[in-house]
Length: 316
Image 1 (tube, rainbow, N blue to C red):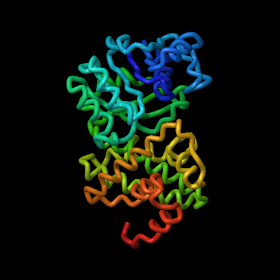
Image 2 (cartoon, rainbow, N blue to C red):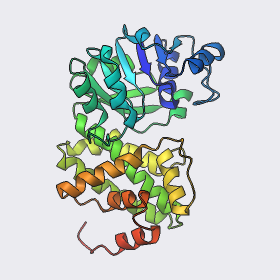
Image 3 (tube, rainbow, N blue to C red):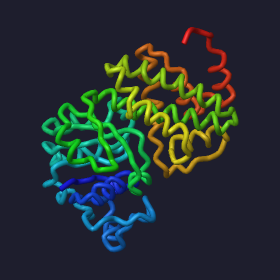
Image 4 (cartoon, one colour):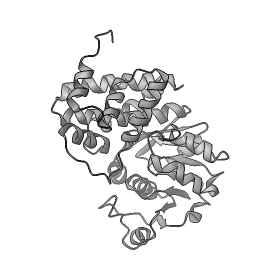
């Protein structure tokens, strides 16, 4: 049995994809009423409307129902992960796979690192890469990175004919690729929202990718990891589609519009955390720094654009 903690869009999509392939899946929702509604209707109308849950997927509001799982996928918001792990010591010893992207604001750690710290007896891993929940749930071909110190068995257990998992042992690189691309996606959204054009977005993506590589290398990641699915692949997806919440948030910033605060935008916290690390470590991250300042309203949009365009010319 595969356990999935978190019945948001991504957790539900993974449950549908794995259940459709005949896996026994148990999906946990923190809300008992929502769990009961999903059991009754076989749909998650609030988070992923229109796609039926296979009969191989059972829904529960009790964590205890997942403790016999071969693996548990943690599809929780990044900023909620540390607190959740602290309240569930029973998970320690079970294989745990983080399915969120970002950097914890309090500890400045990535999701797999949080798991390793909170559950030292568990095999900790991260599942990340270019993926929208709706595509996975519809059965569209998707490829992801599974980063783990020994992930061969998990790779077989969690792969399907259309959900392809590629192994990596570079957990730090996979964590940072998934986290940093969200910040650059916000910046790409700002560019489009402000009407700066597609050429400017392409330049922003290229320079943002250089920032991702620079920061990841300084934190001990392997350079080639950022050129794979969890880095470059995810960057392309989230910088070019309005399905990306981070991109839509950036568009709203660029247009000077309000954004729905109930929507989780992981890049907001990541921009602040990474900007703080960069300042104390002396890492040059101009785009990330500008996005953090925009979010905190320390700069106006025009000031941020002018500051980036005024940077010294240099060799690429």
